[in-house]
Amino acid sequence: MSRKPYQPSMPADWWLKHPAYRFYMLREATVLPLLFFIGSLLYGLYCLSQGEASWLVWLSWLQQPWVMALNGLALVASLFHAFTFFRLFPQVMPLRVGSRTLPAGWMIAGQWFGVLLVFLALWWLLGAYHVIN
Amino acid sequence: MSLTKRFQRSDEPIWWSLFSAGGVCVAMLIPALIVLLVFGPSLGLLSPDTLSYQRISTLLYHPLGLMFIGAVIILPLFHAMHRIHHGLHDLQWAHSALAKWLCYGSALLLSFLALSLWLLGR
Image 1 (cartoon, helix red, strand yellow):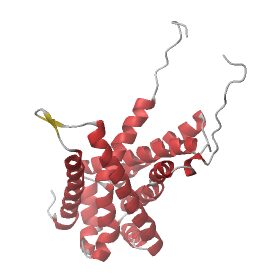
Image 2 (tube, each protein chain N blue to C red):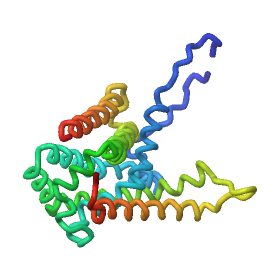
Image 3 (cartoon, rainbow over the protein chains, first blue to last red):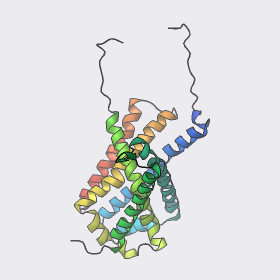
Image 4 (cartoon, each protein chain N blue to C red):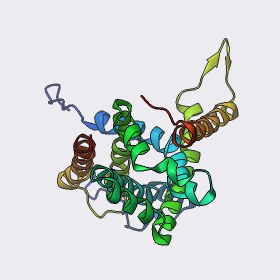
């Protein structure tokens, strides 16, 4: 062991020093507006448990400009998260068909298609599906 | 390093699995849910009566509604608090066992709250 070991310094603003680090931190920050949306859902769950009047209060709260703005930010953040997340899948788990590896672009497109299917299914469930039980 | 060094099992696989599962839910489900719930009424995607108390409570208090809550509240919570835990370390704001347990503890607590509210409303 050397007598004066090298101590690498790590300034707290290290992540501002390189575009890749800033990109990483931006993705980490996507959870901040997400937490606001999760909080909105928890508030909605509470209001639903309190009865109809309270549920209507929540629905109109959701339409307030500042709430819409923050949840709009949460939407952008979730799409950005999805963009980075879907790119990882072909690298982490390449799918093979026979002896060929499925092109990464197809796997990414498939995942976005999944997002679209989920949207249509949820839209159908909320908007069109009237008969339950 | 001696051969008798105690090998301590990491709890990271638990948190990382929840983080990863939450990441899938956030990418797949959250965009659609925000578009429909927040912007659906003003964009005309949903009429006001489709979000009525009767309809939503019938849908959500169905046993499958609990799975829905797991996918859009509980797993995303663990996803978010994992990133916050590591973000606090990255920013050098906090890196301690206490910070870790506050992060995952709050995710656990809020998940418990979501489950209780669901049971309460039923």
